[in-house]
Image (cartoon, rainbow, N blue to C red; front, side, top):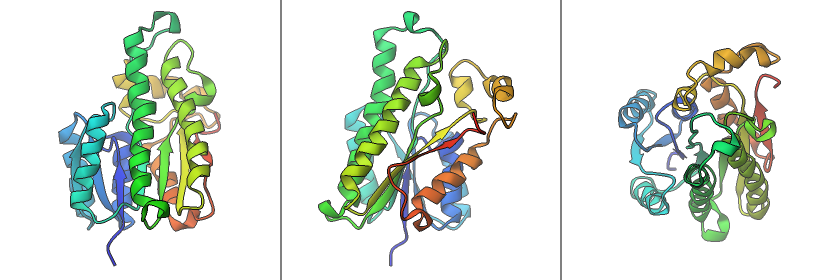
Length: 249
C-alpha cells in the first residue's frame, strides 16, 4: 500500500513547519508548501526526510487562483493520492483600526485567508471525496481565537477572515460528511511564532501572555499535536468542529 500524503500550506515556519515535522514522524509523506520563504521550507523538508519520510517543496501564492491550480498539478505529479490537508497558509498586516484600513488591504486579506483557503480545500475535496473517485481523507483548517475575540485596534480584518474559516469548516464538513472526508478546524490563541513580527509586533506573544488564564503563550508544537490528532483515525468520528488551543482565553 502507498504511504499517506499530507499537504501543508504555509509550511516554511511556525505552525505549518511544526505540523510537517510531526506528520513525518507519524509516517506521512509531506508536500511542503511555501510562498516566499524557500530557505525555511527547505529546512522543513530536510527535517521531514530525517524522520524517514518523503518531502516535496511546492511554491505558490494562495491568494492567486492560478497558483492554487499549479500547486495541485505539482502535487498530483509527485504523489499518487492526497490523504490530508492542513489548510494553514495565512497573512496578517500591520496593526491598525478599521477606520484606517484601505480597500487594498481588505481585498488582499480576504483573498489569501478566506478565498484562497476555500479554493485549496475545494481542490483537496476533488481528490479525496468518494463522490469524485477518492478514498476519503481529512482537512484541518487553521482558524484563530481572533475569530471569537475580534482583535480590536490591531487586526479586525484578520479576525473577520478567521471567523469565515469557522463557518466554512462547518458548511464544508456537512457537505462531505457522507463522502469519506472529515473537516475540522483549530483556533490557536497566543502562539509563539514569527507571524507576530510580520504583523509589526514581534513581542506580542510575550506581551499578551498575562491575558491568558494559563499565563503563557503556546508553542507551535502544541498546535501541531492537535492537528495531527484531527487528521488521524483516532479522530474518525470528529467532523465539523473547531478546537480552541488558547490556554483558556
